Image 1 (tube, rainbow, N blue to C red):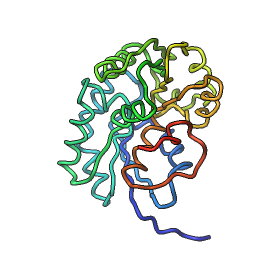
Image 2 (cartoon, rainbow, N blue to C red):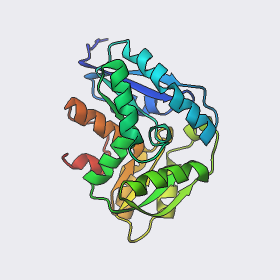
Image 3 (cartoon, rainbow, N blue to C red):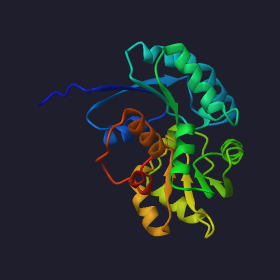
Length: 241
């Protein structure tokens, strides 16, 4: 067995009950990057009170993971990185950088960047969440200049249940919510395994698909100036930044 000495250490902050980020990144990160995670608070239900607790825990978790000598930190959680509206993603990343001295990005910032890369103006949004959580995402998107034509969640509060959803659930919801005048389909939730379905959805709908895990991976590779040669992840990875 050959052991590889990695060039970069990636530290991700994820909800305590998230079971998908490490799995999906493990299949897609280049060999030059080692993955290290720090868990945020105790989260069983995805609802505003639990998300607020995670937001309060970001400083502790980022300081801990940074002590292991990370080259890049990612707040790899959709709702906690946009919870307080427009600009909150940048504010929380700046605070993490101040605390740790380490370059930091967030899933929500990566999501906005990805939407802009593929030229999004009007989109449809699919999530596994309840409406009170979906409303936060819609407000964040619209305050950043995107028109949300339709949004729908699967109505799941238990985060472990979200992590157990088959990737097919992402395909099915994307097909259901698509609108002819939407130029992009956005699937939001880093605990929802979406990566295996991106190519199939795009092939079916003939338009870009952005998922929060895919967008975060794109931002990581761009920040570290690394190429990507893994599974096909759709039009976003065919665009230069």
